[in-house]
Image 1 (cartoon, helix red, strand yellow):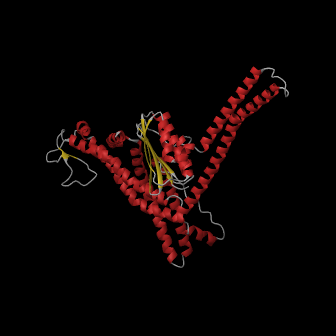
Image 2 (cartoon, rainbow, N blue to C red):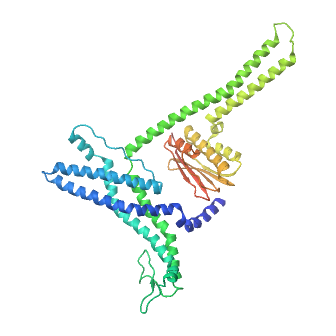
Image 3 (cartoon, rainbow, N blue to C red):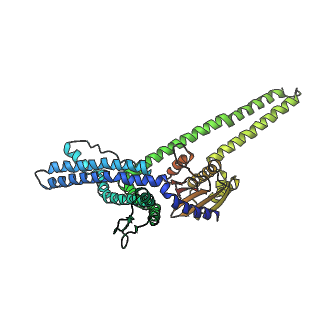
Length: 446
């Protein structure tokens, strides 16, 4: 009930506050800045392709035509890079650039390689499709402009005296959509507040119109401007392999350090205490000279043995928590019960994941609940783990202050890297003021 209440109160706040968010202004700026780049890029690429194709079909200028076509694909790559930069800086949509083409061999071999450049042709496709999308984005900017103009109608009437002349219809109200029978006109100062109300409604709708059109562009950027599917898969495998190797090396270093500084010291002290106790016993058949000192040495050795066992047990628990032996649901129930913040737990896992996936899911849940306790200021958290479509989804929601970001160096970055080693993902939704929701998606089998 409380979780539903958080979502219900957050929605009206998100609608009313949308025009004042950084995301809304960034998306509007992206639409405005991307339009001239789209027009120039489309015109240049189309002209080069048309001229190059014309020369290619004529036997006389075939070589020149192919060179122009190659130039068009190279130019499309340049404009694709500009669009990628705008998407990264304004939308936070960071797409890796495809690898550069560096053909070797004779001239015709290099020309053939550039003609077969799949990333270049995807860039051409994006540049061509971007023009109509950019026109829609410019239309979205029009919602912002018309909303601001209409909202200022009372001020313009009072400041500039825009009163209707005899026979005039009055001050027109501008709308971003065609209005049946024409847009209303303000013939009195009181009537300008109707235009202002229309402007306010337009401004409230403008971020969502912009967001919908930008969402199409986001999909195009991800689909066309990044590396090919096979290239990206190879790159992901290389990165995850490097992360797995680094994680294993870090784990071994941590174990070596913990053993050296902890259990090894205890065992050395244990050996020294037993050695001193052995010396205190004297030769066979001789009475013990100082029974009290011998008793203290044995007690010290016993204490060191207990502490060494405890530290070794903690090390083993860090590698594989014993609570996972009974399955992930029981382990998460134990984790939720130990939390100092009230945790509502819901688990539905019909098929048990492999041990590696259970371990990753457990440590992700532990780290996320630790973040809730230490950083969010939340009073309540919800931990849900469900299995759907062959995937394990772990979701932690809290009613804290929000503002969590998976920046470099944060704990969320480590969780993201841990999930990526098994082709998993981590998504963070944490607006200022909350609520914060972190979703980890993992395969059932590593």
